[in-house]
Length: 240
Image 1 (cartoon, rainbow, N blue to C red):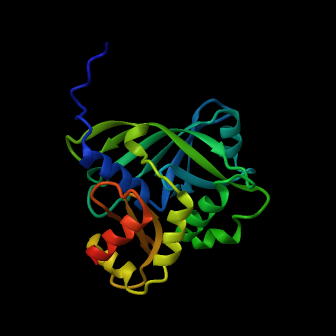
Image 2 (cartoon, rainbow, N blue to C red):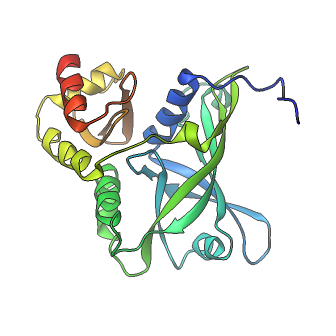
């Protein structure tokens, strides 16, 4: 049995929360595929969304070379994490190894994933329904998390995703709370926002709420997992 490398820390709840935050707050990511024509790694930029359980979702054209490469070999990776001021390497980032699969437009998950993605990226509604565009689910295999100097972790699929029951009920809660005028700004303040206005809710799941304003997306995390939309609503009411 291989011994664990001393470069990596034991994964704890704070590492999992940071991983979830990096993925859910990133509006775009670097997507790496194995180029079907050359066999070399090939990287591009993509818009990034998530399903309720935290699985990364991308929207790409079937005409793009990276889409054709994924059809040939579904193995890929996404690098997520926003770069702020100062040294770019001082900011946390995560690389998720994944396997890509196309979502069937007639499948049971399509409407939910489309709704969540377009709430985060409303301009994508201009082309999301074009015949050559498709949503891809990037099912995590593992991940490398760099939380800063001396804070490196290797995460499993179980570390990266959360259990979700009754997905339709969570979508209903999202639609309900999205119409509450003051709630997005209150959640943004709790999440450490410096921007004061323009906030809107773009996603709700058992572990937290995603809020966006122009080109900034923040994650308001809940301690633990809420077992139902009603429990989440109660927790948000108490917090705000």
